[in-house]
Image 1 (cartoon, rainbow, N blue to C red):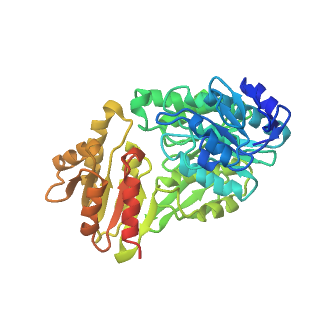
Image 2 (cartoon, one colour):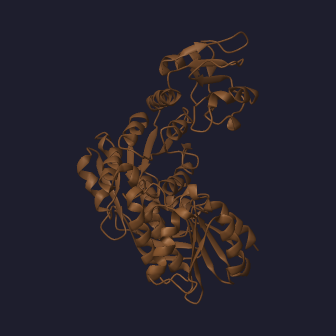
Image 3 (cartoon, helix red, strand yellow):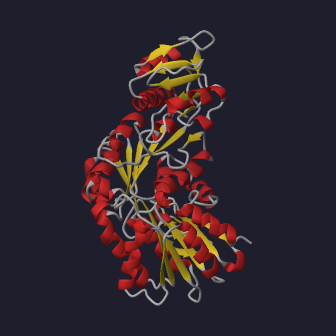
Length: 471
């Protein structure tokens, strides 16, 4: 974090500074990292005592102090020998702190802020863009999927006066969530990848999702740039809602940057990039799945907008080994078995894309195995979406479907109704049962996809299978 006195932090957050003998005072300066996890705190850091659903950060102020924290942001005074700033709401306080920090960094130097949203692909696009921009200058990007009202401000607070690029991933579960994040970060470039059914149950339908994602570009300044997926009619429709310059990317249609000749294999994805000047560039991603071409196009469009040489940007992308932990992560290898662990998140769109990739990359003579768990946050749409996925599995002739967990049982029943019988569809109560079945049922040469929402826990099943079939 940029250096601030405790008095400044108290003023920014509207808090009450409490210092005890032997702790920091109002005019002392702090510039350490800011975190809500006491396990990640180091010497000189600031600990945010955030109340949670299952635990309370106030209980860990002492632990943070032992690890070297010198300031705690709290909602009530804690019995610990550490300077404390008491605020009404620590989540709002870190948002205020992040807003002020990024404003000061922007005023002091040439900071460019890039906001990324979309129903799918945010984290992969963030990682791709981070790989490109980090090779150019000092870049701050989110850890993992830090994209909500807590994670995004924590990312922003990692900036300092040497930061040239700040990437902020912006997720949303409700209308207004992205507006709040945009008002903190004030992006110069806003990227919208896709509008799908992720969180549709919480939003109340896809049209509400459109409204929420539009918040990314509707508040961009006229000097900003909105980068939109021209193949998604809901996204390209946002061009009418922004005062910013609009640039686009596409596979099927016309875009500022476009991809053609896409080929997916077990070793990666290749395509031809068409730039705005008419030039063509071969691109060889090590990441599986043609759906990641859209993420690459978005990252390359941002890079070009920022003036990065397209050849250097492509080289950085080609060096990226995986999208993210548990996202189309390739494991295994023994007996020519490939395990694709993509069980960190799942919406109907990402589930369908992963299954399509499974079919595309598997040699015709080899088996495809789909190990699928629940897709959460779909509300009343869940049943129809499981039915749609079941139909896709049958039409793509997936050799073996293993459905895991009661929340996904509809998928198992629907696949049988669609014609997946005679042992082609199997139901397991939990991940342990699925592991016992799969460890003896997977054959030489199989390609196995493990896919579910994070809460279903199948990412750990994917890891176990990967270890079992490691050379």
